[in-house]
Image (cartoon, rainbow, N blue to C red; front, side, top):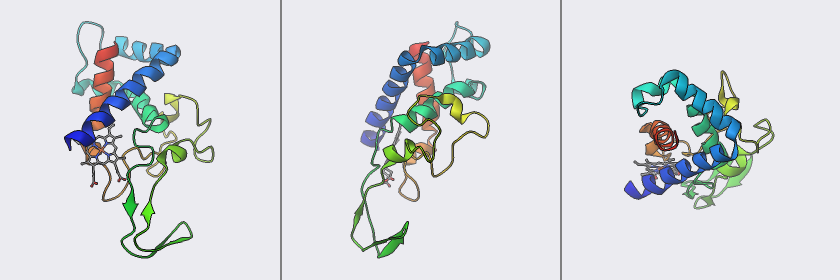
Length: 160
Ligand code: HEM
């Protein structure tokens, strides 16, 4: 649990920071959100997060472009099955290329740009489009621990 949760979180925080440094206009927008809702006299805490939707979208966009487990983890078919029209014999090792799904131009507009705005409103997000934590019974339990919130707080309180 500790191993699975440490590097994944640290790497995502680093990618978010790096993306903001490379996109100063997004950084400025995040700063405006903080100045409007938090000011600069205190750290952000979890109860503030609902007032900071732009920053939460920055984390989602970081998950999309820089998934820390780009092929998730290998899974083995426990029985013969058919997946997307392909026959998969029992025992086959299956890798899910989340990195490619997250950058698929059939799924995302302008997929290689760092554009947190894509998640605003109804947005482009969907349960099978953004899968940095995998899906189904063996998906990451860290997702349920509101990992996005921790990451948002870490990036916020380190950078601003
Ligand atoms: C940015 C943060 C994280 C990301 C992107 C991430 C991603 C993932 C992915 C892709 C998997 C494999 C899912 C699959 O097989 O389809 C996984 C599994 C797992 N993660 Fe995370 N994780 C994160 C944080 C955490 C945290 C904070 C914890 C624990 C506190 C954690 C615990 C685990 C465990 C125990 C598994 C194995 C689950 C199983 O095989 O049943 N992860 N994670």
